[in-house]
Length: 168
Image 1 (cartoon, helix red, strand yellow):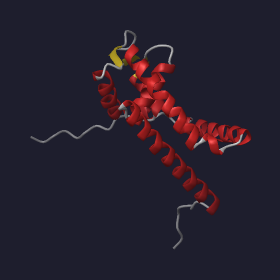
Image 2 (cartoon, helix red, strand yellow):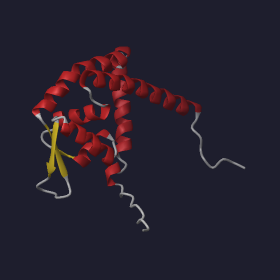
Image 3 (cartoon, helix red, strand yellow):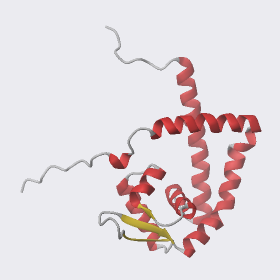
Image 4 (tube, one colour):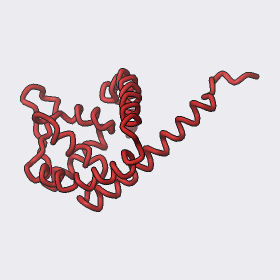
């Protein structure tokens, strides 16, 4: 019998494992830093960063697609940030189904307090090992990979699974 699944070649497999290990190592260090410096999860830090960089409020769907996180998980994380006074959520005046998220002044200050440590970890773990040419190549390659992945429909476009009705 032949295996119907085409396997990854040694070069592909090697590149995949190196990439995943590097991403895991970097993300672990960043998670530790944002927790230690700001009491934030990595996703909360990403949400605040997206909101700081936005020109105004973002919808929950825009945030979920931007940080690549589930809608339910994002709702939970946003609830924690709102309870801490770092963001506000409210209905969109343009779309009754959408929830708009805005960063508060406290949220902006909190993000900027945590940011220097984040920059330090990122530089130490990733950029210090690269030449300027390496950085250019890495940016070009990862932009191409990201754009290819983003060409797929966003997770928020996938229909929600319906739960079967309960039998009473």
